[in-house]
Length: 135
Image (cartoon, helix red, strand yellow):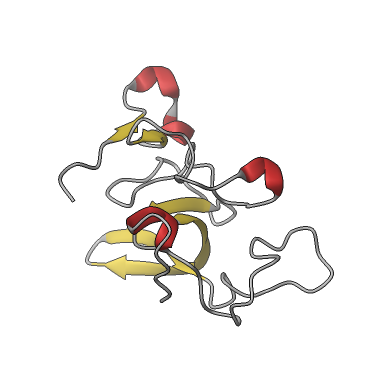
């Protein structure tokens, strides 16, 4: 969608750890219609990356927060393995299989109150207002 606008941190004044991290999306710091103060977690977009560029000098312990409209929230990418492409050595970060799982008896559950099974998430807040689109 060409109407989407992402504002990111660029320049040395932000430091390596904040390189290309999001300030806002469409002039908002949270996913539209999400309410983090009511327990809807990972709705805050600040400090995540939209996937084109990531912070510099990451380590194996770094957690990269990844924002995509198609996921409708920021999700954590975790170190998986070292990779080698030619002479370039890098780190592979992955989205864990359990990222959309319900957490029983936990305040850390991002989807409490949802009747969706593990692995599914409601994307309607990012696309069509109140219409429900589940992937």
